[in-house]
Image 1: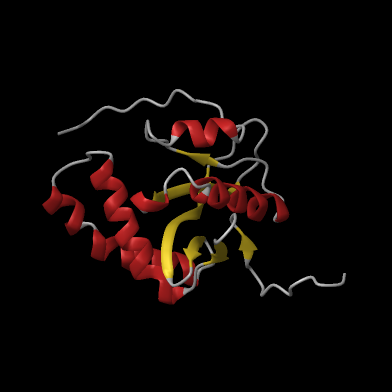
Image 2: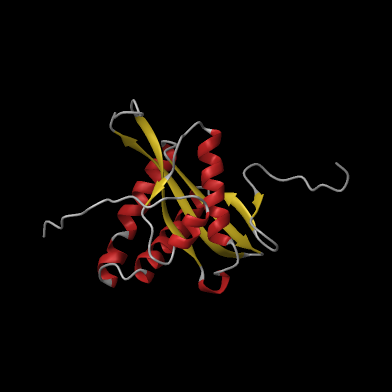
Amino acid sequence: MAGAKRRTRGAARAGPGFRLREATARDIPTLVSHRRMMWTAIGHDSAASIEGSDAPYEKWARRMMGERRFVGFVVTSGDEVAGSGALWLREEQPRPGFSSGLAPYLLSMYTEPRFRRSGVATAIVKAAIKWSRARGYRKVELHASRAGRPVYEALGFERTWEMRAPLG
């Protein structure tokens, strides 16, 4: 095709002025930082508790990435990171319609405030769905914050009814 630009493996357009790509191990500090900001934005727990989870999450993400059970997505605008998110392939129990195995779970979605409402989160979710479909997965699950629900609903996600009992 005349005039078409060649894209690098894993790269895609996230909208005018944005570039989406799969994360590498070098991006893990950004993914950790964005995860911390996500927890802070949704008002989860104390700042000390949230920061205290950074090192264990980083270690876990590196291990999962090494086992090919974690894939991150990063959207950039020029030299700035606009947002990120990740898929974790978690093991699920056998049940009707699912014999057993891994299933993609979308987590740690975050868009920098100045890039919100510009399609960054939507591009990440679409990339996660595309990645999952290309590997034969039949669904993607996530836990949505109130602020994130419109993004997911617009892309066909349906609410489920998980329950939780804090055990103190």
